[in-house]
Image 1 (cartoon, helix red, strand yellow):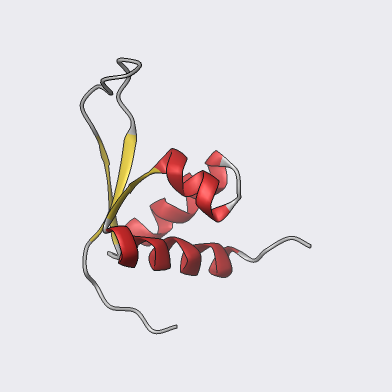
Image 2 (image 1 turned 45 degrees about the horizontal axis):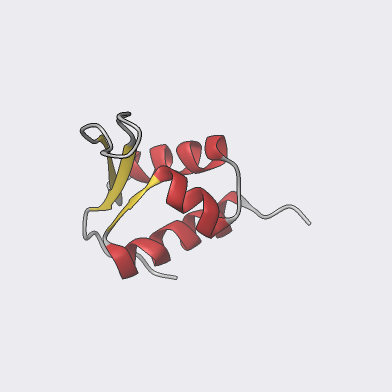
Length: 78
């Protein structure tokens, strides 16, 4: 059964409560949805001020930069 975008956003915010900052790829694995879905939901959360998406410096393992999502600390009701 397909999950609603609201459920995915709640999972993202719950994970960010625990970790405060997390990569898009790690979110993809933990929320169990695809990369584009995570990007779209995070962009919407960023628009409303709940998260900040930023690009990091190059990863030490593969030399590529990657996206990180960070909580802004704005409170939300479940």
